[in-house]
Image 1 (cartoon, rainbow, N blue to C red):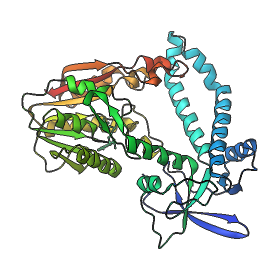
Image 2 (tube, helix red, strand yellow; image 1 turned 45 degrees about the horizontal axis):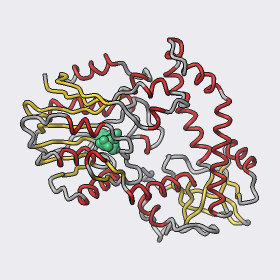
Image 3 (cartoon, rainbow, N blue to C red; image 1 turned 90 degrees about the horizontal axis):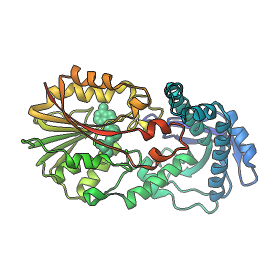
Image 4 (cartoon, helix red, strand yellow; image 1 turned 135 degrees about the vertical axis):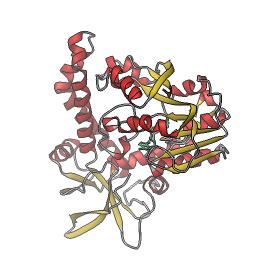
Length: 397
Ligand SMILES: C[S@@+](CC[C@H](N)C(=O)[O-])C[C@H]1O[C@@H](n2cnc3c(N)ncnc32)[C@H](O)[C@@H]1O
């Protein structure tokens, strides 16, 4: 999400001190040092400047900026491959005890490298006016995608904004997903994700939610952290008469609302809430697919993937007692990736269930088939290839 406090950035251009609104989805601070770059700037010079912490405001051809970004990416990857990571990667791909021990370190190192990569790439900037129009040569129409991602800008106050080319690419990619949708074959429908909302591009867990027997009474269900609304849609399609879906992220609420409307599910209500809905009847069924990895998100876009100190998981489990009707069930969707990364043990997970007064009634498992789980060049392949995604059916003790 964008910062609610507006931030501004200044730079010198043609003897003039320029000023623009600063947009950063990754919550990067406005750059202190900006130089102008164009088609005459070499990738090596741009890379050196970006690594030194200088931001590069692009004034050349629009498409050449995309090529420069790719060239920067290749240089970063080459440097990273030469780094320590490569040694660990070699070691961890051999399945023995010593290698397994290195996994948590490797995971943290990989995240650091990714964050550093993102910081360097985010230093290539472009200027747009407050209708998100670019004056660059061969610039495509960016307005609709930026409007959908970043919202309306205040033209009465601001004249232009600066953002990273990377954030712009994120907005353009999201606009495509939003237009063409993510087909969920097992449901016979497509889900249309919005920018900044967890996109169910890997959705092996959908089948688990279709296979699990509904509790005998299933008048009311909650979907906690609904994202695009996918789990609520499964429940509504399975005939649950009242589904209450919550999320903290306003973009998720707008997205889920659009999906429910498109599919004409009128029995799903949405609430902006921190976990559980307020003023709602007790639930016979609570479903939740929390972020699976207990680690600190490094940007707002990572909140759906990383759950710092398992806060969402704990909150959902702890709240179940208060919100479940008698004989009610909590269906928790969790992958065991965190266990393979040694960020949480199975015993710790079971202890969280027990501490919340919940017992395991049954568990359904599935093995992910997405590309990343099969990519043996991934340094964390040992962990990813062993991953199992489960639906834990929990009941009150
Ligand atoms: C992994 S995504 C799952 C989205 C969706 N249920 C699905 O399975 O595709 C987790 C969702 O939980 C939401 N979330 C995170 N913390 C939350 C909280 N405290 N209260 C409500 N929703 C939260 C995030 O915004 C995100 O949409």
